[in-house]
Image 1 (cartoon, rainbow, N blue to C red):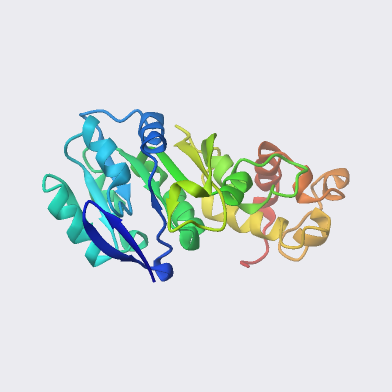
Image 2: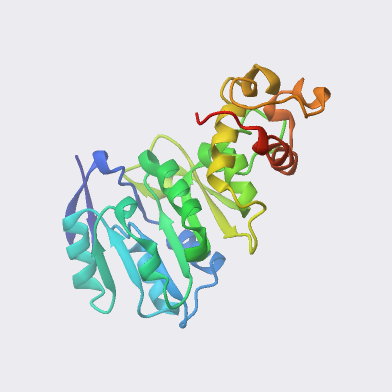
Length: 265
């Protein structure tokens, strides 16, 4: 474990928790401004660590909620920011509905690389609980989220998030502003759930996307025909690979296939 000193406090940066602490205050200010935090907002911060983001958020919103899994860091935040509500737990186990009962959440977080995808999919499943999420993550994951059709990064993550949310790539963050220094660069994105879902069966669409991209080199027909009746779909579309279709086109294709689905996968 690597030792990090902050405000005369020494705590082990635990690699198993994916802890890399942000040290550049200019970056934290940009992140908080990107979410337009205000005094009346219902803010939730994921994994505050030593409070780099927490400090900036508190300047705009003096009272909010943080979720911290590490007991030592949770205690540190309690001592440094006694006005905050600290939930000592794994974010992936948190029920967001009670936290957003009065007002949708504004979410912030420098999220651990090791659980970025689970956190993103949890937020996607709970998209009615928050109005925006400004998140720092591994650069490569951010690129996959904002990827366009026909590129190598365009896949399941991009389609599922872009179908239900507006995604803004904000800026890159170099690895040298973290302690301990990670081996990769980071980036900050903003996720804003769309006001109206493009379809009712979000779970069905998720299964469809997984199947459509299951083997990227295969055509849509080859990937889909074992799970869906494709007879009513234009054969020219089915000759394409999933990565060739825009998100809207995949939504339309799912809408046509949905009544003919033969089995769960």
